Image (cartoon, rainbow, N blue to C red; front, side, top):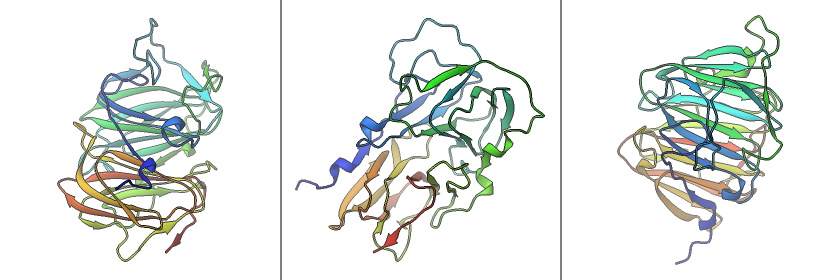
Length: 300
């Protein structure tokens, strides 16, 4: 039987040798992949040391003939940068030490535990260096733009001036500072207030047990767009969830079974959930991106 809501469920394909930052495995999704929502995101597996300096864009397949240079850039849109680990302790243990510069002054911030960094519109950020790496780790971005390479939306910024070293500290949010979502073994909830006014609420959890995320709850309706991103907590193969997940969509409670990394695009006022883990071999990750600075929803 034809599924009414199948157009809302998108497979994520982590691949080798993609453009952008030099990851072992990476998936990139943009508005064209997400039913027109003006957002793009990247999730990747990294183990490189030294400077992150891409020689090609996210959708390129051929290296550019350029010399990597430690340089900042700024976007006309807000961007969230996530750094976390893989494995049972991945939301507590980054497994690496990252040096990220913020502002036109290139103020350096060392990230050694899982954290989120807010890059408001027009704020220079980067270069990024990996100073130490004990095991593969994850980097993800969420940017409020139809395409991360949108023409005219990104400019490079040369270093100018200096700071006392803490001017931009308020933009770094450690996962350990945040509330853990219900039903998750570990994770965080950040609203727009936590994200310097970015019109998003982001909730990430590591789930390691069978059953519903919200026991006793049925479907949920939000008055805005939402993404449910579910992927494997396995640096060797994040395409494999390591679990069997049931997600219900619509008033009909149409069931979709996920065993591979996927994103579900939930339009405004569309009933979704419950999300139920039917079988599990290892913990998996799930990220909810709500397109509102303040969460608002009704359980049915």
